[in-house]
Length: 179
View (cartoon, one colour):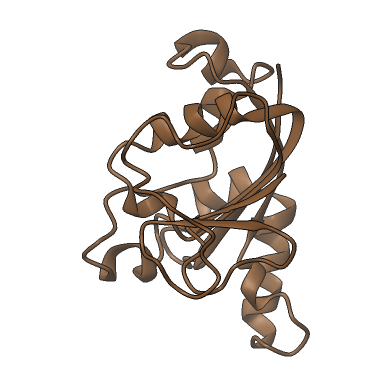
């Protein structure tokens, strides 16, 4: 089963749509702040969550629930506004902010997870992409394109040294469940 969590009216093709609102394309209506989600343990093969996690008061609990319902090696794609972007702060319904290290707290290979162990959910961070919605050729200016390329090649250096001066807009995390 492929699950589009928080799909709204734009469910990803080939996925089951889950949202709090009964909109066109939503297959299952469920409040994402209520746990557990209406799925069996180890029943999901792929998860897609686009601009939803920033709206939920307890994002760690959501990640743990995604972990519970996912099979081993499940591909998880989560897109959020970048914490330094004005898009992160202009929406009054955003309650969480995300930087490049956020999912490292779930990655057993990373020192943050090894030291902190905030959660039993485990997933590896396969890649981080800045401004994926701008990666369409000629959809951005020359300088913006160079900045995206640099940030995608060196996400930690970009965040530490440039993001406060030249903020990009979004982050997409490509993750894999480890059980």
